[in-house]
Length: 116
Image 1 (tube, one colour):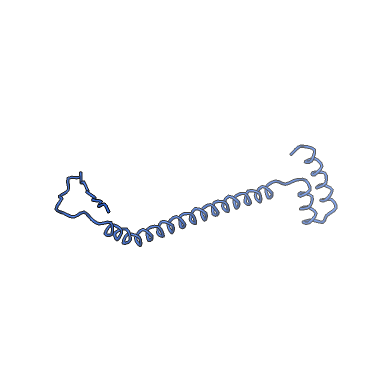
Image 2: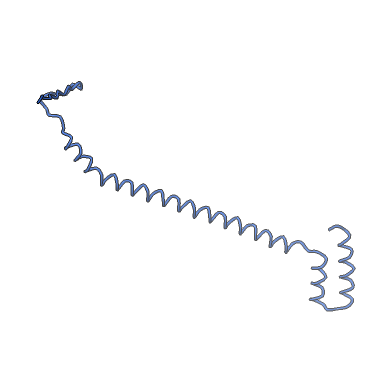
């Protein structure tokens, strides 16, 4: 059988009297770092999840605020804008008087044709 010799050449300028770290020692370092890496990964996942939850909550709150504003605007618009039928109904409910009803009918007819 022939013999194989392995020669390691170090071009880094390190002291040749100091032994190089073995592959077993390096794999031990990698194994020792693994729990810390997993912990960092879990923490980053938790931060990302919390960030997404906060963004979703803010988006929902913004949508509800916009909806409340539009509902309020619609309610104010309905209260402020009177049409002839509403004016007629108010007089009918409040007075139940034949002359008041006739006047309300005339006013409603005038308002309907005035384009108001």
